[in-house]
Length: 221
Image 1 (tube, rainbow, N blue to C red):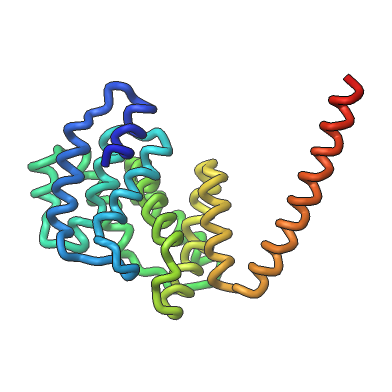
Image 2 (spheres, rainbow, N blue to C red):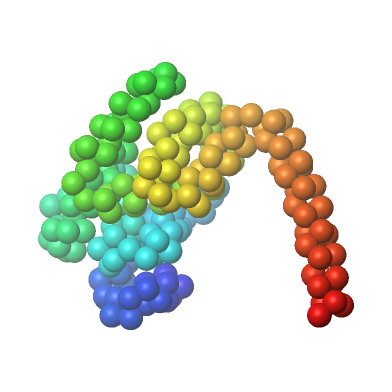
């Protein structure tokens, strides 16, 4: 939590650390006893999501919502309880993320995927909802190895069809690229490894070329 608090302060020296501490404590208590498939305590997930939200330089409300984004879906906590403890703004973002998480998407047809993306963006009246959801999906993709293969393939395809294009549309190139890379890794492991090895060879060759140029310039100058 201290690392998260420092991230929040880095973008906002007046960050409401008390709000974040209460959100973290509540999330840890509500998820107590729950485990990730990796065996880690479940609370590690909302903590990582909140850290990604803080890296986006979003406000305290969004970071708190990152900490609380699963409490309504995965525990007995109600939205009314979240609002009572953390205020209407935090509750509104948490409710939005919860609604998105419960909407099924099963079609791989491009037109249907585009319609689904449009629907998600249209139903959200606060951009922080989408940004917290993207952080949630990114951390889930980073830890996807622990899921059964059938679930991995479904989640990876959904990420490629829905969430990476939304990140691209919002101008979040770094997140879009990582989502695509992680999805590619699970959907076609052989092609992924071949491409990764080729890119790494090119990177090493380019690095050598840059070093040679720098050495030549340093000698000349």
